[in-house]
Length: 127
Image (cartoon, rainbow, N blue to C red):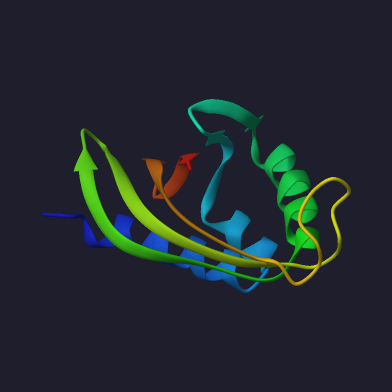
């Protein structure tokens, strides 16, 4: 059975992400949080610590006019929870050699969440 407190932490973190509320996102994380984003099986970005993740989150927020992560399912893997997540985002501005403003990006991936001291200490996205 999925731990309710951990599931709620994930929901708080994702709600803050969806609303571009970076302080609320960070409040759900430990100071030494590890973040990784893997795209197509390759590690594309990683941060160590809340300060580095905040910088990345602020840059990422600028890319989207709107964005939403929706939990499809959650399963336990050892002491971690792994969520299957649907992502939908609208690009805010033209990206050189990339998508144009208004482009909608939709994908499904997984995010592995680790926990320590009542907060999230690991976020590993795989798309």
